[in-house]
Length: 205
View 1 (cartoon, rainbow, N blue to C red):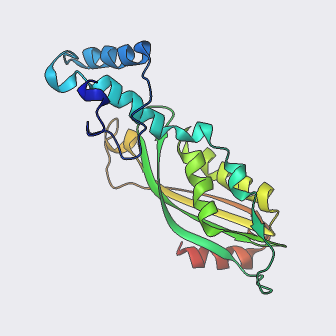
View 2 (cartoon, rainbow, N blue to C red; view 1 turned 45 degrees about the vertical axis):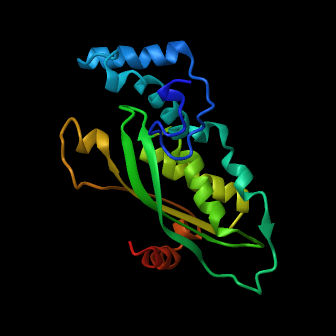
C-alpha cells in the first residue's frame, strides 16, 4: 500500500479509499501538473494524481444519485397544514462545467403542499444530488425546482440560489465578493404575485 492509498493521506472526508484509480486517469492528472509547470515525480506530488481522481469521484457523486428517489416517500398526516414549507440557507458546493472551478453557495427551497409533504432533509438531498455534477447555476436552479414539482405535485415551488463562482473570483476577471442569484418559481409562486412576495419574504430575499 502506498501513501496515496493510506486512509490518512489527506483525502477529503467521505472519499472511498478503496476506489481503484485507472492508470489513464492518474496519467491525465500528471499531464496537467506538467503542463502547469511542475514536476509530478517530486515528493509532494507523487500521490496527488490518485488524490485528485478520488476527490473528483466525490465531487461528482451526483451522477450516481437519482434525485427523484429522495421524494418517493411522502406523508399525508400533516394535521391539515396547508401553508408554505421552506428550507432556508442550505449550503452546497458544485463545480462549473466551463472551467471545473468550485461553485459555493446556499439555496432556499420552498413548496406549497397539495396532499402530502416530504421529510425536510429530502429537499437538501435533491439539491446535493444535482449540485454534485458539473453544472451551471441556472440549470441547477431549474433542475431542483422541476424535480420537486414533478415529484410532489405541489401547488407551488420556489427555488432561489445564491453562489460565488471561482471561475470569476479566482481567474479571468478576478472579482471576489460577487454573488450570482438565480430563481425558479412554479405554480402559485409564479402566477400569484401575493404568494410570490410571501415566499420571497420568508426566504429573506
